[in-house]
Image 1 (cartoon, one colour):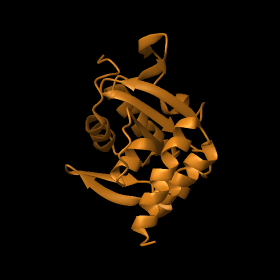
Image 2: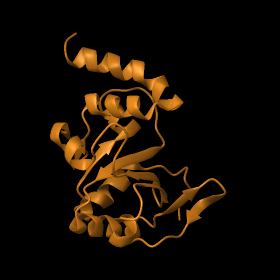
Image 3: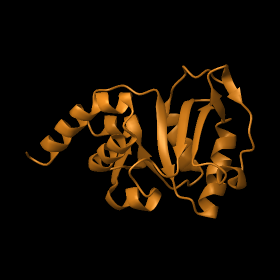
Length: 167
């Protein structure tokens, strides 16, 4: 198991792709792909909750050696990586062999995968086709979450959205 510091978002996304996981990239990495200069140390996704997709996600988590991320254990804690287990919680904070991965089935201010997928952009990063939440949806979610770390980046994200819309 690689330590949390070995953050390789491309490797995480490649494993999700390999298993055919349907998701929308959200959070800081999605904001970075929209031009935000703020650094992030995890991959945040909102996966589809279909049974088939959860099975694909569970298989990807096995490949990624995913474990539950806790502050007291840098290697994380083991858990049942199955579709059934994934259905039991709305948020999973994980450590993987390629760094941190957070699964949020219904991000603040959204209705989940179908809601975010509607306006998501298809962005290709080194041969990986990634569905990235729209900047407006990222802002909507960060406003609703109202965490200190979100409030700090919102002015930058709003400016980027204004520039993108020609305001």
